[in-house]
Image (cartoon, rainbow, N blue to C red; front, side, top):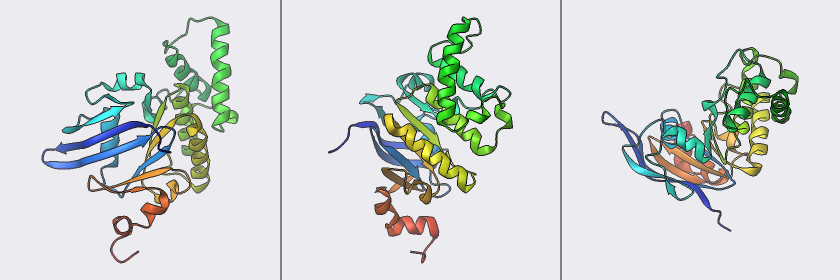
Length: 251
């Protein structure tokens, strides 16, 4: 049975002084899925992501969220609609603890980002929920570390915890496993899978192997265009995808 489309683009295009970085991308992300936007370096993944999260304005084309046109909607207003991009709220306070970072994200969700004057009982409530999220992402033993002290993989886990604290309907993750050791990749992939149990995830990724067991659907970009789309088996068997990733003659 076909799922409801939660995010959709039509003819999404971005030009920079004559260079076409994203060229007529038609994308449909179904509710409750993990959808990857992948491709080799220079494929247009990040530019496309920046268009979806309103950090860039498209040259032409439309973006719809839950059927409503958000092409001209400001980035902050898009976040209020329930689309949260991970880096927007991660490690903004590198010298605060893991617990404090997640608590601030929870306070932001309640509409009071710097709730320093609330009663002790309210702050305790934030602490309890923050510790639940911290435990969920495997950071319980790091709760009193400052964000700047964390190893790289643990920082990305904190990023996901602070994103989850905002309780988004749709999470957009920008290369969540980039630069990680193998054990960190496995941990973050499992975390993303758990986070997706009750929400939609769209992630930019470079590596096909990362999305193999994680994503329901994969859109492959190359030179700003959609090259292929489908599940992992479909896109990994596509000769054009193999050529884009590995070069001619490495099927």
